[in-house]
Image (cartoon, rainbow, N blue to C red):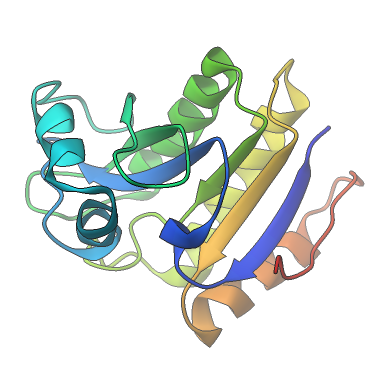
Length: 179
């Protein structure tokens, strides 16, 4: 079973094997987490992603990471063409991203709060869905040893902290800031 950590800060600053991008079905990276990743990783990461689209809601695709410190970008398709989302889309995208990370042999993966920015999904509910899906995927035969929820702001951090604390099954969790 892998370890789950919380980190308050910019996902682009993390040195992990893979960073998860909250993607739309078209894979354009214009706003939110995608915009930040494109800004730091370079236009090439968006060009590479768009060539793979469109892709179904709830799926995930992998590209290179451009100038970022990670090896891969996993584009978790949690937003529809209208940039809205649902519980099913967030759960499917989270599971797909975790499976892609395992397929790639990643040991460390960083996730943002999928669907809670431009997607407008309730933060507490998104945190519960994402934490549950990550925990269940970590329990599978996976190479992923550590998942970091990279969260910007006090509200997302508190929501994910509460979701981790409320998890009912006893597992090895490390809920602490990553510095």
